[in-house]
Image 1: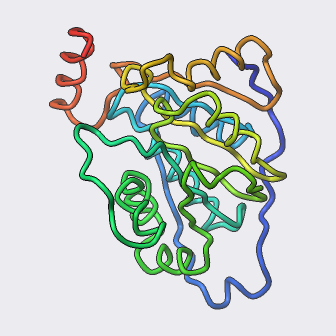
Image 2: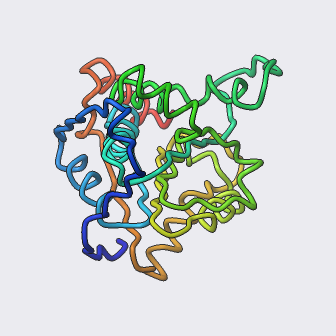
Length: 236
């Protein structure tokens, strides 16, 4: 397990006169499980956070609510959203539109939570100002993110080279979050996420943590919990 290093709370990075024109929402979040509470804590104290576990455990919800809270309070200036472009089941083929329009369906698990936390008006304002930005894995190399939270969903679908490209983009005042379920990887080779976890546990870099969720952490619904347990037991 990666070393947990405590540090001072992130300072607010407010821009002049923003509060005079914006109605910033007050975001409240109460963890439902111990694993969610540990993840929520690590987001405040680490630069790189890995959240592992099955569907329905609140990994994405917890991280997105933290990001929404920070953006609303001015602790970060930007939220970056990305994920592996791997469909579930058969592909629908090419999606028309701009890059942002093409990425929109992939980002809904995260943008739905951000919209819920920030409210429609403040969410749309931040999207229009590029304070909430969707980025494709293919175009992330060469970017540098300052004072941002970078949220990577479905990270189990990434290769180690893709994770290398993402993890080396993090600048000052930023946090990288990798979320994924190792048992749901469609890669023919070992998931890059698990290779990355092995590296973290071997080299123990400062400011990194790993939070693991299990079947007992599923909070989405009883039906979801039963389905996940059934598929896990069958190795599906």
